[in-house]
Image 1 (cartoon, rainbow, N blue to C red):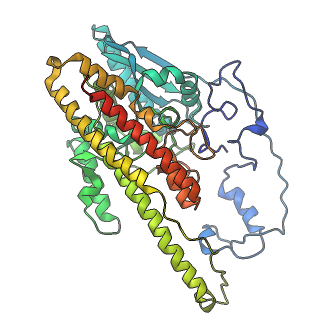
Image 2: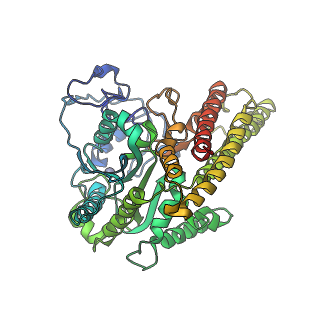
Image 3: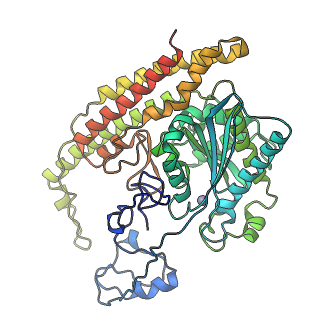
Length: 518
Ligand SMILES: [Zn+2]
C-alpha cells in the first residue's frame, strides 16, 4: 500500500528518475511506504477474522453485509501473521515515440496511456491503450504520405501505472528540465467503455476540448459526443437531489465544464509536479464497472458487456487524436483563459463559504455546549459525548486572494480579446505577435506551481489542483488553502492565501506581457 497523495512513482526516488545510478532512499525513509502491512482479501477469508472479534457492537455505519454481528474488538482471538514482502528492484518499460515538428520542434504535445494491468486489464488500461495505438497508426500513415506536424508529437505508453504511476512519474522526473521548457500539453487516457465523454483537466482547455467533442459523432445516437455528454450531465443534475439550474451545472456557453483533476492516472506527474497543462479523456457510464482491477476484467467480458462493437474505442481515438493534431497544428496554441479565471473565481467563492460556514457552525456548537443541550439529549442506550470544544474561526486575509482573482479575470479577458484578434487575422497577422503568445502559453501553467509545494508534500507543486491528502484520488482545488481551513490551521490558511495569490498574479502578469505592445 502506497500513499500516493505524498508523491507518486518509485517510493525510493521522489523527484528524480529511477534510472541506474540514481540516488535512492533507504526503505525505512520512504514516506509513501506505509508501516502497517495492508492486503485486500476476500470475504471468505475475512469472515472468520471478523467473527472472532469481541468487544462492543460496531456502530451501524461500520457494519458490513456478512451474516454475523459486527464487533470492534479488541480480541479475544489472536491472529499470527507472517508477512513476506518482495523488495527487489525490477525493470519496467515505457515506450516513447516522437514525430519532430516542422516549424516548432521544441514545442511538444505529449500523449500517454498506461499498458500494464492488474490482471488481463481489458478495460483498464487496454481499451485506452488501443485507442492511443490507433491514433499513432493513423498519424504514422500521414507521415508516410509526406505530412509533418507543425509542433512535435510525443506518444507514450507507460508501464507500472497500477503499482504507483511508476513509468510516467519516473519519465517525467527524469526529463523534468526539458519538459518544463518544451511540453505544451499532456493528453491522458486510461479506461474506456460505452457511454458519455468524460473530460477533466486544466480549465483553460475546456473550450478547446468542447470544440473537438462537437466534431465527433456518438456511435449509439449519432449526435455529437458533446451534445450527448451535456445532455447526460443535465439529466444527472436534474435526477440528483436539490434545486437549481441543471443546464448551468452541465456546461457554460455550450461548452463542457472540465472537472478538476485529482489523481489515479498518469497525468499526475505532468500536471501536479511539473505544471504542464493536462487533460484526461475517456468514455464511460453505460456498462457496470464491477470487474475493475480484478481477474474478471478480461477480453471476453469487454467484448460481451463493455463495448461489443469497439466503437467507443474508435470514438476515443477520434477525440484524443483530434486534440493531438489540433494542438500541434493550430497557429495559436488552443486555450480560452476566461474559462480558467471563471473557475478560479468559483473556487475562491467556495473557500469564503467554507470559512464562513465553519465560523457559524463553531459558534452554534459553543452555544449548545454552554446551555447543556448535549447533556439534556443524552440517550442512556447510546451514550454519546459532545464534540470537543474548538476555538472560534478567525477572519482570514481573503482580500489578497480576491484581488488576485479580480486581476486574473481582467487579464484573461484582455488576453482572450487579443488572442481572438490574432486568430481571426490568420496569416496576415504578425508572426512575432503569435510567437510571443505561443511562447507564453507553452509555460503559462507553470506560474501556478510553487517550489515549496503543499504543506508536508513538497512534490505536489501545483497550487490549483491536487488529490486531497485524505481523499485518495479525489481532487481538492486550491488545496493549500482549502485543506488548511478544513483542518483549522489558520496561520497556514493565511500563508497559502499568500502563496496562491502570488501564483495567480504571476499568471496574470505573464498573460499581460504576452499581449503588451512591444
Ligand atoms: Zn488504469
